[in-house]
Length: 333
Ligand code: AVI
Image 1 (cartoon, protein in one colour):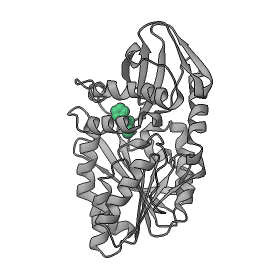
Image 2 (cartoon, protein in one colour):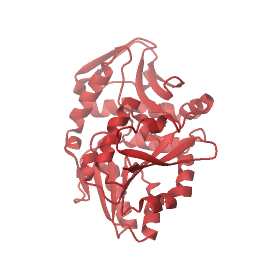
Image 3 (cartoon, rainbow, N blue to C red):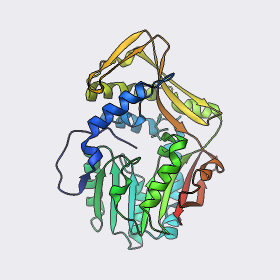
């Protein structure tokens, strides 16, 4: 999961910033300006949900009874982590968008048991969250060299350095938050930081009954609605915007043709919002919407079709008994 960049903190050389991370505010201003200029539907990049409050709300979402992905993926990984580690034989575990970084431990423990663990890397947008994860993992796995890279998994993978004995984890279904057209380029970038035989384990949320998807993104406690509105609070805090989040209703729906869940914010009244650091003003009429997230769902057929020409191939497809979620083990050819 992404996090909105926080103010710089100091913690030795275990956490490194990419050049893009140093320009995070300029990048954010440009992305917000471009997204809000889109017509007919203005958009905001979903990575800007994740300031400290957004991360806490997402953590809360993962514990909701309606939100099946988190617990379902944990069940799959608990069952298959050893077999994945035996297949790839890694000496380094990398996690992209690591968030609070709990599921990585299934793999770290399996690699440690075999006496292979040399290195851990995490690539994450939030320097503060990353520094905490690095410190925790360094304490718990003292035999490994633990490094954090502050950056964006969609653009900064090269900062991980060359692969070899590497298993990259991209969990939680976060791949679904990329537009399907971005996947081929993303997979090619992943392949570039892997050596032949290295592994890429991807959590993939699956196409399923619409009612189940609707409930997962429209929970009865309103946590997802609050998470959705949080993106406006982030724009207020980081870009000096003047959104009132309560001027907006949460809307989430499944589009069966595109096989994705879309989250939007719908204006309750006509309004103008100023976003000074992005140099723009957004005028909306009552009922107008801003798209804040895509969450693409895949099948055993549609997911591998996105790998063509990337240098990665699907080796294992592991699911739960109800086929809600899959863990796809890809290997670099
Ligand atoms: C982080 N990501 C995989 C979540 C998802 O399901 O797309 C974010 C989320 N959005 C609403 N609920 C959870």
